[in-house]
Each structure stands twice: as C-alpha cells, then as structure tokens.
Image 1 (cartoon, rainbow, N blue to C red):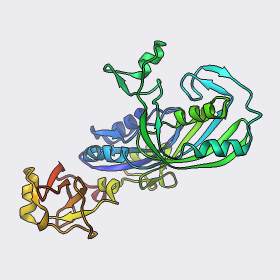
Image 2 (cartoon, helix red, strand yellow):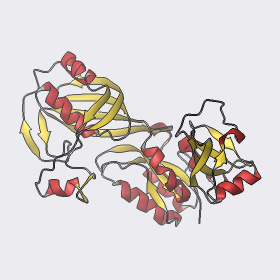
Image 3 (cartoon, one colour):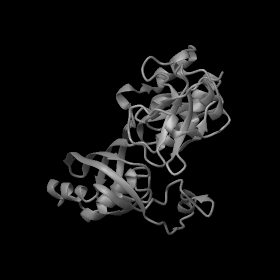
Image 4 (cartoon, rainbow, N blue to C red):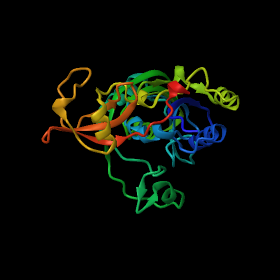
Length: 312
C-alpha cells in the first residue's frame, strides 16, 4: 500500500507519540509512517501522523505555528519542569495575585531567548540531553531565539495558572512554565498540556485513538480527522502549475526559469521562497525554492506518483 496523507489524531494522556505511529503502521500495513512533532506522554492533543510521501513534508509541519493550552502549578519546581518530574524545591505561592501573573506573562510575549531543558531530545556530543539528565549530569545549553505570538491568561486560582500559548518552532512550554515560576519568585512546573492546533490542523477536527483504531481495523479512514492530502500542510504557500515539459524537467531535478511560471496567488516572490508545484491535473509534483539571483525555481523535493488521500 502506498497511500500518502496526514492524519490528525487527538493523542490521549499516557500514550507516547511513537505508540500512535506504531498503531497506524500496524493497522494500515504502511511502512513509512512518522509524526510531525512529538508530544510528551502526559500531554494530549493534536498529533499529526504522516504516511508515505507525506513524511517528507513533516519538517514544514514542525515549523508551523502551534497553539497550546497549559496548566502551570506555582510553588513547586521539578527536575523535568513538568508533572512527571521529582520535586526539587517548594515555596508558598499564596502571595502571588492575578495582576502579578499577568505582568509576568507579558514579559514572555514576542521574540525571546529560551534555554532548552535538560530533559529534552536535543543532542550534545551525539547524545540526547535527557540521558545526561538521567545520569544527574548538567550540560551547558545555549539559549535559543523563539517567538511567542500570544500568551493569554485563561484563569488563575492559586496555585494553578491556566494559559493559552501561540508560539513558533522550538518553544518548550515546560520551560515557559519553569521560567514563569522563576519570574514570580515562587517556582513552578507544567501540570498539564494540550496541543490545540498545528498550522491549519485543529483539535476540534482531530479523531480520537478509539475512532482511529476502529476505522483502520475496518479498512477505512476515520470520518473525523480523516486522511488529509499531503499538501494540506502547505495550504498557505504560493503555487505554480507546470506544463508537460516542465514536469519532466522537475522530475530530473532540473531548475525552471522563474519568468516562465505564473505564481498563484500573484505576488512578488522573495529569494528563498518555497512554493508548491502541481501538474495540470492537480498532482503535487515538487517543492520548489526561488533563487532570485539566478532567476530560477530549483526543485527542493520531488515527489513520485502516489495514491493521494483523495483517491483513498
């Protein structure tokens, strides 16, 4: 079976992201299955499962804007910065009022620097940081620039702070929870997390694991959160339609003259801009990258003909 597409799954608590991938792989018989951005076992919400050629688009999904709902517990710091960790220190947060919380949250909005947590999959010396953390070894980590587009206080009933976060790639919500506690002077950890959106994919449209398992066991796709075409991940990108000769050229990895292609919707194309390339019958053929100095579109990824989600 060579069906390509994206499944929007509501990952349940206590499941690993890989467990969902394994379930889909086992029930569909499709070998190339992956996820576009892991969720920790204690977290829930949107987990995008990519099938076959859609796995080649996962990097773009990982760069998409994400929205989370988080519960932050003030007063307790854990070694993992979340509810699964061992408490490291405790303080009384009863003196923290709502205005202080709002003022502290405001400091994190925009482009900020964030130090990745020790309990993460980032590599140091070829090993993930969490292995050093489990061995009680601290590793110096450089701060990374991240963007938090929106940070809304939903409710505050001490010691619990409920927030909604809209953020860019590379943001660690448990580090945000930890840093919020540090700013408030009482410490904090992430008590619960739900991912509400990844790019255009929302939790409201996601299918549950029981729905997914029942549908796949019956040889069909779930009615809710069903199989989306691979290019659903790129819906906000510009697109071009290729003629027969251009299609052949792209198939061989050859560049195309930019002035010969009409971008839709019409726009001024910046250097390095990526776009979708389609055949005349609507098949996704490639991802092209604009080289302004050379006046060409260079193939970045080329897709072999495959059964699309619409044909499934």
